[in-house]
Structures are given as structure tokens and as C-alpha cells.
Amino acid sequence: MAAENGAPRSASGAALVTGGSRGIGAAVARALAAEGWPVGVSYRSGADAAAGVVDAIEADGGRAMAVSGDVAELGAADRLLGAVEEAFGPVLVLVNNAGVREDGLAVQIDDGAWDRVLDTNLSGAFRLTRRALRPMIKARFGRIVNVASVVGTRASPGQANYAASKAGVIGMTGTVAAEVARRGVTVNAVAPGLVDTDMTRDLSTDILDSVPARRAGTPEEVAACVRFLASEEAAYVTGATLAVDGGLSA
Image 1 (tube, rainbow, N blue to C red):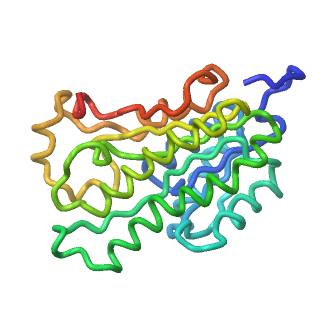
Image 2: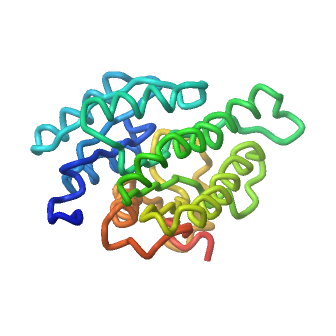
């Protein structure tokens, strides 16, 4: 993770992980901190959990801060990125992980449930990406990793809004990647399948029958993939969507 002058990129920049207080986001925040990045741990609710992630990072010798904000709100991108920039310098790694589900059959999903899921999972990720790009382009280095889902590429009855949001994230990832590829900025996505988090524990255990690995993944396994995509070694990987799903989408 060396800069042109030989110093590590993390010496002059920082990372922001949205939805970083638990599950995949918390694991990603810890993984990036272990790489030397000062990390902003963004959360909408669960201040105590976010503080716990920060404490764990600092106990391991890293630097982190908790940042409160709802990515679905207009202006949230400026507030979240601005807070991290003020504390640690330009955000050179952005992980768009914040996400919500409001499941139901298509005939049952009302406008509010549709808007809440799309505003958080897709529009929020876009606004953060848009705001983060200029400092990355200026630095000639940037890593954006979007947390999508296998639901964005395969049918999942009862999740039309969630599937639409994650398919949008995958489409956005490739397009933005092509726009900034010559500027030293990569944009990739990871597409987790069934991962053992608070967000998936209400899903039927029958889904395991369709997973070739016959188990749920762990947040740390997803975080390991994000960690690679955020690294210097992944400089030639952009516009990709990496399935982390135990073979579910094979």
C-alpha cells in the first residue's frame, strides 16, 4: 500500500465504511484498520455497537472514529465524508455497506418500503461515491467497494425492492469503474450470499439447502475480499463483482 514517495497510502488518507457498527461492516472496518487505514465507522443507529468497533480497532493499535448519519438523507455524504476528512485526511477507501431490507411480495410492497430500500441501498451509495471521487482522482488513488448481493443477479421472491437496489449497485459499479479507470481509482463490488449477520437471521434456514457449501458465510470472509479489493495489489481489478456465496451463484 505504498504511495509514490514510498510512504503508505494510509499515512495520507483514510477509509470510510458505512453501516460499520455490526456484521459485514464491522468486520470490514477491522480488516482495513489492520492494513493501517484510519477508519470512519459510519452508523445510523447503534451508537454503542459503533463505539465497540472503534474500541476494538484502537485496542489493536489502529485509529478509528464513529460517525453518525443516515446515508439515505440528502447531505449525508458531505457530513460523513467531511467528518472523516477533518479527522484523518482525504477518504481514499470508501466501502458502501449500509443496507436495509423490507421484504414482501411485489403486490405487498408499498411506495414507502420501495423508497426506503432504494434510497439507502442505491441512492445513498451513489451520493457517497460521487462525493468521494474528486479527492481520489486528485490523489491519483482510490478504492471504492460496494457491498451488493447475489440477489442482484438472481431471482429472490419477496425481495423485489432489495433485488432492484442491489442490481442497481452492480450496474453502477461497472459504469463508474469505466469512467475513472485511468485516474488510479478502482470501483468494485462484492456480492455476498447467505452470511451470518443480524440482517439475515430471520431468513428461512431452508436457503442453506441451495448453497453448495452447505453453510452460511461469515462477515470476516466477506471482509477479506473487501480488504483485497482495497489494496494496492488490486490496482488492475476494477468493474468486477466478486461473489462471496459458497457457490450459490455458480
